[in-house]
Image 1 (cartoon, rainbow, N blue to C red):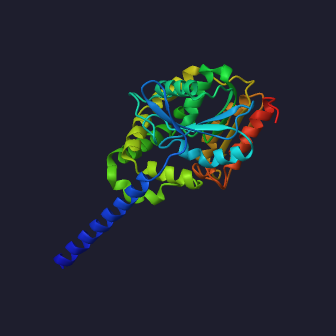
Image 2: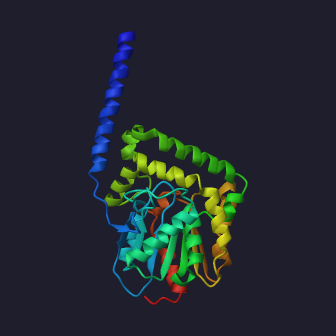
Image 3: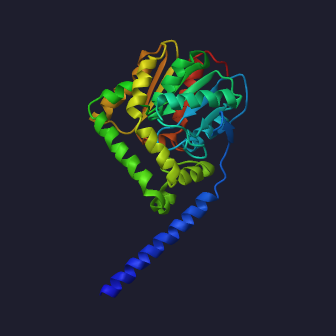
Length: 313
């Protein structure tokens, strides 16, 4: 019996190793979209798609644990509408070089400022932020109001959400999850094929899966999560969006008492705006709202902002 158990364990270890090796090989074969842009001794991966024109560029900021890959479907949909968009990997994420600690809002927005300056994209911009990126979008926007025509927030965090009941518990849970990912290392490799829970086109799917099993990306994500409270404080200090900016807020998931409370705070920027769009996608999740199935609603948010800002088609 002992011999049988030992053989079974050895077989499982061998199978795990084979899957891990295969996943690593596939991940290493991924060719990233976009370019590596030097921001002063470090490079960030930037993916700009769609035709150049006089219309504003949609500049995208991804949520936690990922980067430009998350927006591959929405960028594809925006390009089909003739709109240009740019998404990027924050420091240490995806194909971008690591950045100095701490990875709080000041550091992330500072990198973004350098990237935009080096990108050749002059603006003005429609800023789009998903999830925790709502904090970074707010801080950048209020530091550079001359470059902003409006904002699209996708299940985005606001500084006030960090103060809600249950927020501390959520942040603690995400911190534990990020710590686990940062320490798991190669143990995550067999999960490669589970990495895309958004529903992305092929190129974005391959990038998302590669990042999902990347130990380096996991460490960078953990460094960001550790600074969420500081980023919320920095975003709050930046102030509120000017009421003349059109704001689209799109949330996801079926109604529930907890989500109703959170969404009321998420929707506040749109309700305070002269022109605000508020929409919930009941059939989508926090991740699938970015994908091929539900990403049209994000595009509708962009179109709303452009129309209300008086940008001609």
